[in-house]
Length: 366
Image 1 (tube, one colour):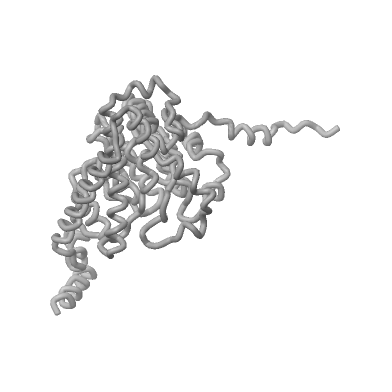
Image 2 (cartoon, rainbow, N blue to C red):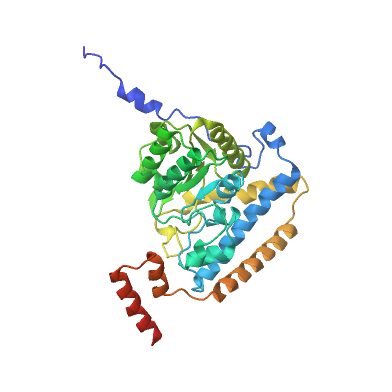
């Protein structure tokens, strides 16, 4: 008879999947599964949540139109992620510090930046970084915003501010070393940081199941000593309540939290042109369209007599008109120049940079 091993690794591995179900208030059929939490929202709250998601969907649609017209720089589509993004950002306070990634422009605008500034940021214009929102500009390096958030959070702690640093990454970001380093730093120093993973199923074309063997992304925070939870990222009510609870826990001095929202990116990874039909099947995608966050809350509101197609169409027209005004404002801003950019690099330009400034000034004067 074989000797029994000192440790049963297979049992341990199977137990990794023993996780609670994602938190929901409204399920994919728009049925209330947590009546107590649902009742904590007023009718006005529900309508406001719907307006915010309609705003983000309209922003996505109009901005994609601008991108196709060649009027934008880099843009990361957000269609499908409205509940995850609006639900979490609306649970924050203006004194909180946002460290966004490139798909988090809607949250940046909701936190205080203007749409015009967001469009200028997309174009790489310096004015696009000069917003009043308490936030850094969107981070292009995947996962790096987690490191920024850890540092900002430690500063908030040392300053004894009633504020947290909150940040986002996608499922692919959790495969980057930066994400773990940021969480580990925040965990070690018990810094007031909220790490949000928007698990939209793909890191560009790489599906979630090929990125990691971890049963959930939330449990990756455990190694950093950080409590974590999964939430239905297509349910704005659940996203809001979980994010709000996380903020209250963090500001009470309990250290960082990580939230994984289960959501889906309906379109391409970016406006640069990847084709999602090359790496996703219709059979795989359709169930997520059936879970659309706008459809889910819309049904609840219509059943309560609080919403109509006419209401929504009017809002969409108003929102898109405002975005058209914003792009006109961006067009009216004087274009940035290479010499101006180089002059901002150092307070006193180095001899090498000064030579570059002179070269480009001469070139642009012709």
